[in-house]
Structure formats: C-alpha cells, structure tokens
Amino acid sequence: MESKAKLFGHAVHPIMIVFPLGLFATAVVFDAIGWATGNGRWLEVSFRIIPAGIIGGMIAALFGLIDFQGIPWNTRAKRIGIWHGLGNVGVIILFGASWLMRWTDPSNPGALPVMLSLVGALLMLITGWMGGELVERLGVGVDEGANLNAPNSLTGRPARESRAPDESQWDRA
Image (tube, rainbow, N blue to C red; front, side):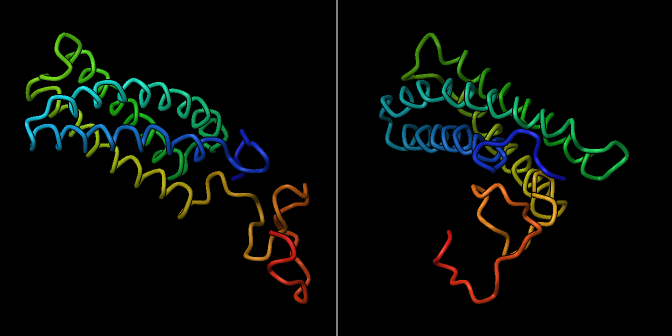
C-alpha cells in the first residue's frame, strides 16, 4: 500500500517521526542524568525539549492519519495501525502530563513527572515496533512494486521498473 502523503517521492510520516522520537528519548536521558548527578539543569533542559517532541508528534500524527485512512478495513494492518495510533496518543498524553507537572519547578520536578516520561518512552518502544511492523512486514507506505533495483524516487518512474543490469549502482542514486 503506497503512502498517500509524500514529499519528493517518500512518505512524510516516517520522515517526521524521527523528531518526537529523538526529543522524547533525549528528555528521558537528560532526566536520568539529572537524577544521577543531582544537577537540576538537566531536568530543566528535559522540561524545555518535551513540548518540541509533543508538537513534532502531533505533526507526524497528521501524516500518519492520512496514510492510515488508505489502509483497507478488515486487515491486520488496520488493526495494528489502530493500536499504533492510539499508543502514540498515549505517548503524547504521558509526556504532556509530565511537562505540565514540571511547570512550577522544572529543575526539581519530583519523581512522578520523570516516571511519566519514562513510561511514555517505554510505550514509544512498543508503538515504534508496531510502526516497523506496518512498514517492514506489511508494506504500508511502500511503493507498489518496490524492488531492489527500483529507479530513484525523484525520476517519477514507477517503483516496479528496474534499472538495466549493466547500469552502475553509482550512476543514479
């Protein structure tokens, strides 16, 4: 099933997810450093990057929803897509609650907001696996006819075409 929202021939949703994934994971790492060292600046930095992850997650979700709508009902992909999307809404809620609870004292938030972020990150691992299952196993968002010798996506040619065997792999990226 080919992605419905593309930029330069590639699905937008997988491009956008790297931002919230990286920001949320970094927030959890900074929380851990802050707790381990007792340095509240790390916890404050975590507080400051969480909203960027939330905004990035909401943008990625819009493009994920566009692709989700193209998945036929009564398929395993649709069921996984539902759980993937709902789980990621849960990730946003957990990090959002963590951020709001840190508001009054970002450099000393207490244990609960940090635990909410940690749980959000653990849930993110599960929903990330589900996203991988959708793309890698079920082919959601993959061009129809994709193959190891498909032409460059910028050519506008269909993925099911193959380059001639005598073409060097370096001729056209």
